[in-house]
Image 1 (cartoon, rainbow, N blue to C red):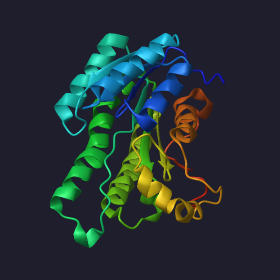
Image 2: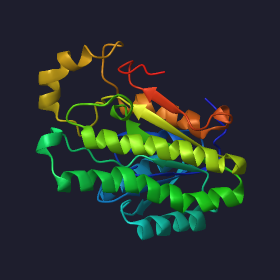
Image 3: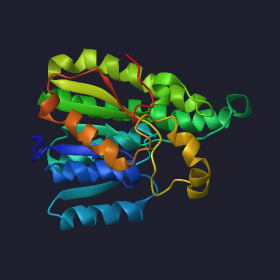
Image 4: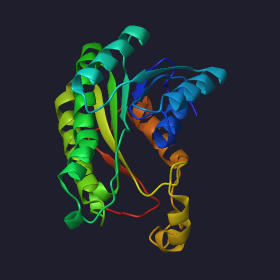
Length: 252
């Protein structure tokens, strides 16, 4: 597939593992130069950079806490210094704390809100001026499909996803005249290298019955849609929410 991403510069937050790493690999395979953000997974980030380089791509790792605006702004500035531009921002960094709402507390809410709400705001705000200046930008914000339909045990995570959707639509309206597009990818339950394998196997049959396609997803199911939205193939698509969820939710 040639999505016209050759030479484009892409920053993926939370890009060292699982979904973020698969997005980075996919964008790199399409010729993008990828900046892989991480907070604590330095070894994973370095290994991913090495694998992308072995495959003939270009990648660098950048440590920054997405909850810290100054750190995010510094990272964006460094990416532009290193690569010369920033065309694609993928906000993938996230945090999930599964609890019943009445059993959760302020610390649970703040931890998720800091990453999944303010983290996205921080990165979008830091990247937007560069995209405006170059008259070229694509923002893809990643949320769980709970943001669209709600989900037990995920009330605060769903709420932060809802705020990300509203932010994305607003940014799309404000920045469209500068040729900056913003969209959301909402995914269902994924199997990743860090899934709780024992819990998953104990509940697999019940979970899979909720999916018309009969299975949970994998990072490889999400990454191509992100690349598609980051490409010129979707040059007239902005402010949209695309569900990649095996049919778990079907919302007009």
